[in-house]
Length: 197
Image 1 (cartoon, rainbow, N blue to C red):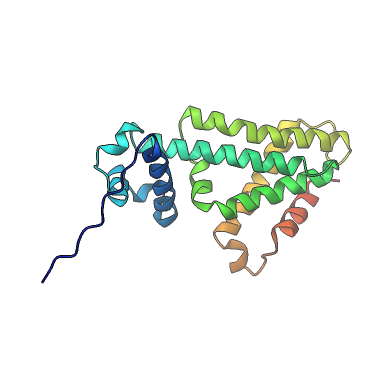
Image 2: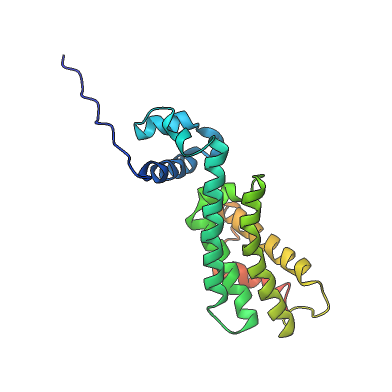
């Protein structure tokens, strides 16, 4: 019985391996989470030597940190775009909330690791995303939609926690299980209406 030929190994040149590693890691994250794969498993999937990933990443944590950093940058762009979509301060909070939930839905694997305990560089890349929300809170305070005397960072933290809770429960089917699900815009509007005037 003739043996089945092995597929030809893909050659990676000029930085293409780095992108292939990131793409492959995203796939493995989606399949089982960060704890379910190793760099050697990723190398096997790509058909390269087990040493090849180490030319671009010191270890798996460095690779996952890079995915988190990319996630935060994309998340930041989504929030910034949402914030600039309206001049109404109250509507801006809703737009940010919808963008938050949409990002969690469209990028579940990366979203799932972005808020885990990562290194200081990853945490630093998340700071600008929070500042977008702080700016929106300050504008809402100036417009009278949020209490003007409250610390804007505390208000932003509360809004962030509310949005994150909606995103996580939505991703895990918590609302559906209790038959209290709704579309993203309605979930955000209902939740933020309890915080705003």
